[in-house]
Amino acid sequence: MMDEYRGVWVFIEQNDGKIEGVSLELLGAGRKLADKLEVPLSGVLLGYEIKSLSREVIAYGADQVYVIDHEVMKDYRTESYMKAVINLAEKYKPEIFLYGATSNGKDLASAVATDLSTGLTADTTMLDVEVEKRLLEASRPAFGGNIMATILCKKHRPQMATVRPKVMKAMDPDPDRHGEVIEEPITLKEDEMRTKVIKIVKDVTKKVNLAEAHVVVAGGKGMGDLQNFQLIHELADTIGATVGGTRDVVEAGWLPHEQQVGQTGETITPKIYFAIGISGAIQHVVGMKNSEFIIAINKDPQAPIFDVATYGIVGDALEIVPKLIKEFKEARERGGEMSYV
Amino acid sequence: MHIVVCVKQVPDTKIIKINPKTNTLDRRSAPAILNPYDAHAVQEAVKIKKALGNGTISVLSMGPPQAVAVIKKSIEIGADRGFLISDRAFAGADTLATSYALSKALERISKDMPVDLVICGKHAIDGDTGQVGPGIARRLDIPPVTNVIEVAEVNESEKTILIKRKITDGYELIQAQIPCLLTVEKEINSIEYSPMPNMIKAARYEPVIWSVNDLEEVDRTQLGLKGSPTIVGKMFTPPKPEGGKRLEGNADEQIQQLIELLNDKKELFAGK
View (cartoon, each protein chain N blue to C red):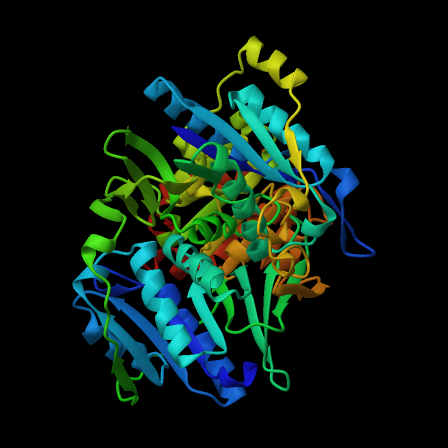
């Protein structure tokens, strides 16, 4: 029974005709799994007037693209997308099916897994495959501690996982790659749908865009209290950085949720990341470990953040950060030679 | 309007400790609490009931007998009644088996009083999966709307609900038919101070406790460990990344070194 299932699939999430970065990253990760298993890698592309995107899906590593291009699929809705994806999966029987761990990806994967009665691992940060048994090894941080759990789905197919954005690497696109585009019909009708997207409002005023930030200054509960946490803002202002924080800090109300870095917040890849008063729980680390240059400041020499940091300073943030701010300000006043902003 | 809120008792992950020798969770180290997102789910149900001027709020949980505590907590926030499904048959359930068990309990609840709205928290803080809510919706064949940040309007006569759903760079305004299932974000509301009568009611409240035998037409192979397609293969500490260089000297010396290092990395700051 399980032998009928072959191939690796990636759900290609697109918004306004633009493919989400995580889908391209998953094509890169899926390519490796497919090569190991010696099976094709396929993209599943749904939407309206999006067929031309299949070129991009192939360029990023897919051998095939299943396309459903129909007006009813214009906006993401669990009902319509779920039905289309379930039909495809039942027809072609993939053995592995990956989705980005975005709002829509998680929503879709949960509904699809329920109908297919199969296992789904959430927020995966590492993927591998045991070739002999054709078992997907989907690993994720667990239990709020410094530990990873590898989740297996031995007896059900497809093996499904949602994967965090920015933890896998996309391939360099090759516009000359060849692939097959398979257009699939759809029988869904608009009046069967029980939800309607009335409008989509893009928040253009959103001031904090961690995902795009070049330099991030992040603080943890080691800052002590809200008043001390202002030092984080001050340092960030001084060097033109964006402020981030840990889950504890967000739960304490020192920062809004959209500034949380980590497993349940943003995964980011800035050029420079300051981790100040942050111990380095795995949930936080998965969110920032791909930063290019990581500077950790912490009182506790045993803090796991020091294992990740490019450079670590053991010391009291309340003493060190004000001095740093002073140094940076002076450097900026001197102008030219050390202008960070 | 009958609203059912699904709630979970979770260890407070802020406090929980891992045994470094065995790499296992020391559950005794953390107090059990009502999953914070679920508290917002209950609060939202209270808000909707208040706005409509009528309705019943039921809370449903699955867990060991001590999980009655989170039902009592929900009563304190303003729920009217609570149900706990508790049985060894449910133990070890992954998200697929959990959504199955909860959907069977929801079917039982809706026999006496049809359910219009199911509300869940966005995810539980001990598992962080967010998969149970959409799973329940699928099993009940009602539309799910996840990541809800506002319930703008409930129209009882038209049987529709207007919702703001958070997306990556803004929100969607969605109209859904009732019955439907919502999963809520924290920003949907703030937890209000519980009035004294609620607290007294909560202290005295005894929820209905059902075993697997109290549910109808249950396929036992879909419950608990048996009904869970996923298993934990292994646990490991993540490989330590490269790096970990410490700066030396006193605070001032370390700061000077850092400034010099950053000076060499100016292109990182500038490389926009």
